[in-house]
Length: 399
Image (cartoon, rainbow, N blue to C red; front, side, top):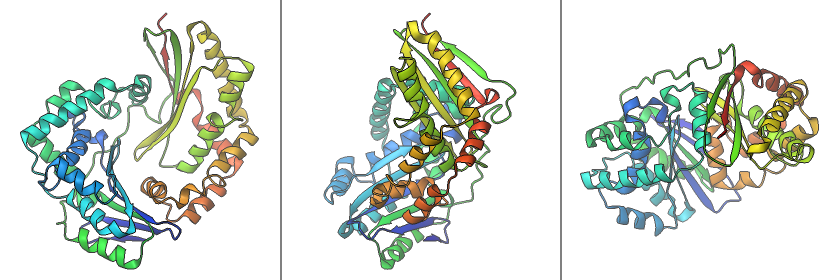
């Protein structure tokens, strides 16, 4: 069920009869990609500060308010949105609604609050691993600002002033950009209460987000290649393929990704290991943004095997473009249908599906949508996506 409030907030709900708990998500459809370049990381900092002080009360009192009802509030910053999620038993639904509603109110952050939270973020930046993945995404965006690290850098985080932070907080908490997703053992009265509570937020001024299009994105005439010396004993090769998310639906790419790289029959886990004896580590993913996406693979081996890895990966991709393994496709599809059914009856899991899949409204529809994906259609998409002029190649090698 979808309702749009007069102030612009969208409320999306789904009843799960077998659940004892309810998950609520506040989604703000603006993320780090729209930050000014000299304030990279401010969205993530604002998300953190929402836990530092809530409607003026201290962090410890706010945490007590959440944990005494058995809840756990989680915040996540993405390139194209920010999420706040809380899951509670049905009897604590109204308290959970009040917690999410309070995020829109003035936080009254002090200079000391901001100083402390900046230190937390700086430690996250220092401790953050997966630098190969961060560099891959940055290079996929052809080094455009939208591809910079979501957490920002130490200098940019420290340069964010209290005034900058408050202005940006009001920018992202815009009613025209907000969605409330509620999933679980709910009744009509619950939805009406949520609508009433969030209806009293004053309507925000309209905001026009700038169009995000990475340089050369989806209009390449050659692949891009970057080389890095990482100083490690291992060597790595990463491939990142552009996805036109306006014309390719997420479920097709999810199945293609799994058919290539997940499960016992996928060619990269099977052939690189069984036929070549190469695979030490493989990381892969399929990131979908509102302005485009990327299918990526990172292969890591010992230095001595890097040349063999490079040629083997190239051969495998040529094979996949010609003919995607049908049995691997069938297994990948089963992961989103037969094996997914249990997950879809967990409120938190399905709330995230609703948040990131606007066309999905119920578990039954989710299963039907994935069940309808045909092998030939995925093969066609593979041929369109997995091509030389559509890839960014990163090489991490100390030699």
